[in-house]
Amino acid sequence: MSLNLCVLPDVKPDENAITISHVRAYVIKSKEVEETGGGFADCHSQAEGHWILGTDKWPIANPMSYYEKYKARRSSWGIDAIGSVIVEIELTNGIKGIGISIGGEPACYIIEKHFSRFLEGQDPLNIEYLWDVMWRSSINYGRKGLTIQSISAIDLALWDCAGKLRNEPVYKLLGGKTKDCLPCYATCYDPLAAKNLGFKGAKFPLPYGPADGDQGMMKNIERIKQIRESVGPDFPLMIDCYMSLTVSYTLKLLELIKPFNIKWLEEHLPPDQYSGYAEVKKRNPTTILLTCGEHEYTRWGFKLLLDNNCADLLQPDVTWCGGITEARRIVALASAYDIPIIPHGSSIYSYHLQYAFPNLPMSEFLIMSSDSSSIVPYFGDLFTDEPLPKDGWIHLDANKPGFGVTINKNNLRRPYNRDEKVI
Ligand SMILES: [Mg+2]
Image (cartoon, rainbow, N blue to C red):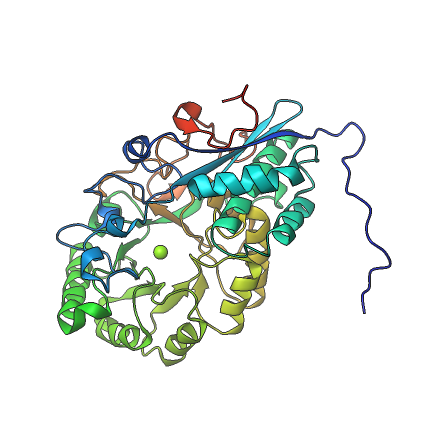
């Protein structure tokens, strides 16, 4: 039984509305440029030697650590193989909005060959409608991963357009600010350097996983102990497990790290193991918080995490989970369960969401300099004016409309160009 009385007529732009004239999807013009330019929208696309790929001294535990051939460096199995996608939406009055995600050429294909048909000619302010038709039309091949990352990049470009049309920052369109600035913790290789830069806490990667046995577990404890001693007893420390562990390994690890005052343990299991996350949370022998959600998608994925009591806090990535439109639904859903949200990375796209809603208490900043010792833009050379944390705080400029940044298009290439006159 349907409540609908009839099929709805087409959603048409209002008379004299400014509409979308072009949707363009770009990648970075070469792998070399992506690596030397700081990764752009894909923070893992870095030159060899960068800490985020794993170092000789400390590898980074990950789902491929079970295989000898792939355990030393995350680049060895292609963590950076897909690369950036950058979406530019141009309006009939010349305004341009920019959104980004991971997705590379496959995402460009989906955006130009499929989703562009729903966007060009439409009112960019009808964001809920545009999200819904992209979602419904891609259910047969999408729902998670690249398809939702493509929708995310488009959605962020629409919000950027909306802010520029209204001449207001995105956080004001979302309901205004709940904070005057954002405290940041750093994700890094060297928590002591992060502490000295003024960050309010630091997160570092777990080096070894279950395939490394008892010896690997002892090396993990050695690394955690060494970091705790370097920063002193009270500086907040967190550990990222990047989907690499099992239920029993996580429970053992929690027991062994009890003495080191760890604030949270992150993404200990592969993202589809909802029952495993619930089991660890139920049997957690410590007061260490358990977190996940970085690789989860849409309100339906996050509802599973919430309904199954999987985590103490959730970490959606605004550039992957469905954009601002879907992230605000996830934020509302989590608030009903009294679960805070601390989004994964994503700089300005996260900051505006964090300004706008009260249940997002702090911000993640990934220190993307090669040795993790100095602050550089999270998106590398992608924008000319990305705001950076000072003394561990982020301030957004209320006078900059949209997401408040300027794209540097010199390094972009459009692989499925439907308009040869425009690069
Ligand atoms: Mg993480």
